[in-house]
Image (cartoon, rainbow, N blue to C red; front, top):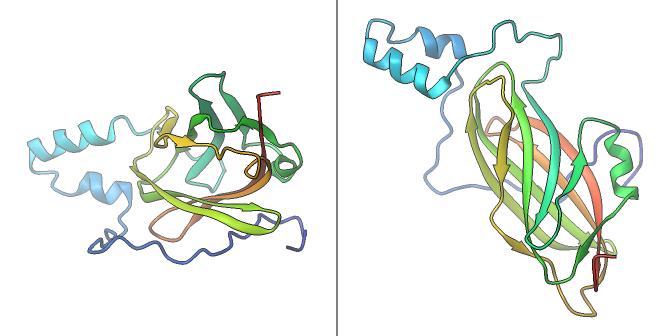
Length: 197
């Protein structure tokens, strides 16, 4: 991969299709709030679903989804936090250490600022010595704009174990939605070791 200062391109990014799923038509938040205005029960229901929409959320940042951090949550150890708001190009040069065979979950902290985002997914491609060893696309869900941070927690996963599984892994992650908008791509690395140190 050429290093031209841009975000990494996720390899093997073929479409992940759920049979029978049709993404909803894109509508602005204003259109959704104004539709069915004559039905008080629907207005109340939409307010319950959408909550308080941040007033004046236009801070000049054109992004709708801001991915703030990724947190690796081992069951038997403190969380490992990776900041995704700074220089993400340096993440691949600073591997996190994971003990072989440990169970962990991945937490993504993000904000939705302006419009409803539909069908967010976390797409992950894991490689070792240049060879893809795993690929996963996790459905995160659909979210409306909120002042508070939104949190996605993955299902539990287990780190590889055994002498052959120990070593350095490169992971390319991408936060993408149904409209094929890539909200953030980042490359990071982990070292699977016999112990945490």
